[in-house]
Image 1 (tube, helix red, strand yellow):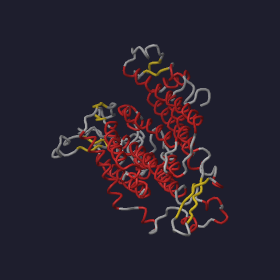
Image 2 (cartoon, helix red, strand yellow):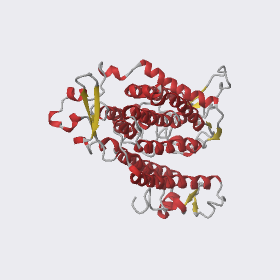
Image 3 (cartoon, one colour):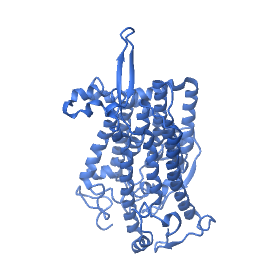
Image 4 (cartoon, helix red, strand yellow):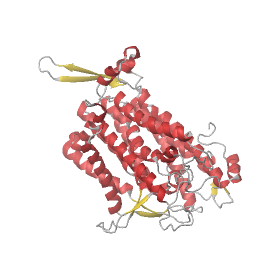
Length: 495
């Protein structure tokens, strides 16, 4: 820590001990600008108005901006139409509902990891129960009104504006936490709330610090006058955003897309059911195992900045639901063989992911547990035990391998994707009919529906590298000794 201070007195950049990440300030600026554009582009260029991709993109020699706008759901009043105050208020109400449920419902009280300042934070976890309450309400509405339930139609009709509302909330939240981070007590000052800055998040470079996050665990203590026993409770901003709005929102979007497919085509395809079931399993598993996040890098190392705020509230729900949105317009029937093949891939990935994580958690909680006491390990000078057999003896981040396998099952149900939407007007009744076919767009839609696999692979490799660097700093020579015993990072025999 000698190369930087906790709160630089000058706005000059100071390279953290582990170096800048994500390409430093320039990379942080690029990601902050490019990723929102990419998310919006996916909604406009793969749409239910003209096709996926928009047909104009198939003939670049005749492509014009006006032609492209005509083939996308571009608002009539231009860029200002991307935002709607009423939609933003409804989206905000969704966030307040999640907050209310966290405070009101009983939850598991868990103590976090020890902080550099010496204290520990307490966490209240009940996101699984909160999600069940919300999903139960949506289920009742769907039973009563079917696919025309107002929540489903509202989401489909206002997708772009809902995306913008989440962008505004994500950005305003990280601006708030960035400004509040300057009130973190310096070393030696009273620090009853155990606030501290993230190790790599206060370099003095505004762009980089805003992106990576200055404060490690920004929190809000609610006033005592709030009723229903909620006064005095603590909201951990990072943990809340990590587990609640985006993950639950991802599942809600998928359900809205199933309803949209039913309204549009009169049936629901096996492909969209399969994708939603897989992703619902992933989401509900994460929510059920919520307390495990206290040991993750997101909580223990990363500050809460634009990277996590945008990722949690925008990227996860809107980018990860691309496949279900595609199938809402172009339903693909997989048949028994297709379903069996994709189920096998998903089952393998999930088994590897969950069994590896369970093995690690059991060993951490009780090394004498009958299920893990046979495992070998090395003990570091810091007192930690690093597994060298079982799942964790095959690769240092073997759970990421399961994660990566599952990513294929999210994309394969879209097949060789791509479609074109044709609109026909009945000359007698004047009624407009639409037909969807693949035509010349076949295969080109894979740019949208299969990008997730590439992105996720890069994400996991980058995260594994960050994990390794963190462990090398923590364990020193012991980590090098461990890497000599467990050579592979993610995929045994490959990487």
